[in-house]
Image (cartoon, rainbow, N blue to C red; front, side, top):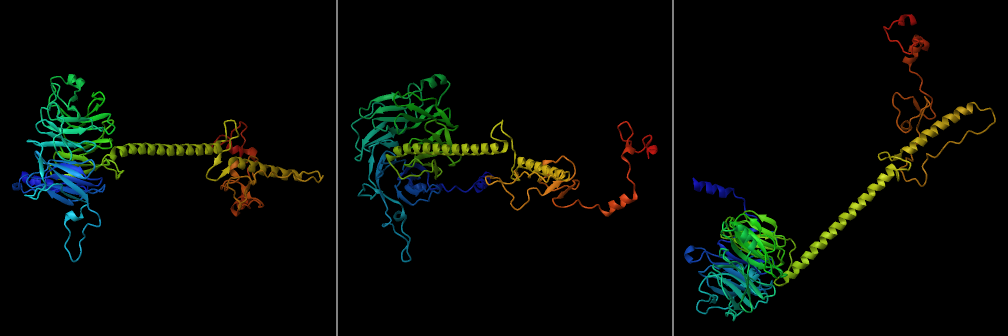
Length: 570
């Protein structure tokens, strides 16, 4: 049955990785307190769903994401947006059209409670790294005080770099500005709005401009809008004219989703769903024209994005639960985590140091993806500077590795040249002396040894024919003996010429220092040739030797048995 197959499929699923955890409720929002402590928020809405609405705190140590360490309940409304203040002391939580502010304080080690034999285990809030509590309490209910910002849902929010302003994107297509921390409407009202719900807002690094994207279909000059924060005027609408002309009327369903600025402020990044596929676009901030073509990062629509505070990468999540890490400069996909979630990704957030991406899904799972192993402690506005220094450090490290490899290459090359010079001589015109690498001796030495043996034999023969003048025999050549400056391997305990040849005038060089073979007539120096064996003596006594001229046929060839005339010869 289908139920049985589904149950079997669930049983065959691999256990979740250590960086993935289930939080017991659909997740809609995420944020980071510091480089290691993350927040996720979600819930089931009304009490009748049986799923609590809460903001949960967890820790990630580059390998494992912990279970919820502490949580803050939000009554019967599920949190939709989490926005951490740039200075990290306060947290904005948006519900539908209301928002509440929570204070984030660190739990010092001295104040954290521990379990003892006399007491029960402390509550999770007491052992968590941070304590999250409402900034303002409603006296009647004892819950966090909520401030209504709009009559429709708040879809996204962002703080200005100085933390003095708050921008919120509404379901109605409006973008509104509020003063912080009073949450009073700003005196600047933006001139215009989008045709559909706003899904992304971002302040420029200098805080003078605001970029917003909407779920509206791109046509008739619609698209991401750039606003002047001081005057509220619309600076530009981001329209890719070349792509619009190429697409024509046949292309439909193009929507820009999510936006962010590079820390340097030179370009902005925007997500694009075009024809059911997710792309990332880059726009120049000085001209508000596209930089290159949009790059496709997934074949599924984008459902969430996050922008690295250091400016190195961009994180994208799609409707199939996949997570992609994209290079911010080249827009090339660096890493893809297939099936990070079972269903569409709902929220994403970077850690302040830009090393980890937290993603959440409506399947109640949260996943931490490590982008870089260089974990730091900088947070907030220090992220951009740390990212710049990180790029410099990476380049310096690459140069150091290249220098070491080059040094090794040239060192090995010089060693190879020296070995070749020793083996074949220093040049093409030099005397070639090959080296026997196994024996450690030069063949030139072997030739000198052979010549010395020949000279001694000739000197011995000449001494027998001496006319009696008493002249001493010539001194033997001792050039083959090792010299003090000789650096070759020396056999000090062996005679360098243990054998000498006794038959024939031709002496082969390799016969001098090698063991004699069975067919070679060689004896050790100072010994006489071995006497013939008894078998050979008996043969010599029994058979007469055949004269050499008996085998001569006169025509220069030796007859074999059966040849004409061989009986006559015998």
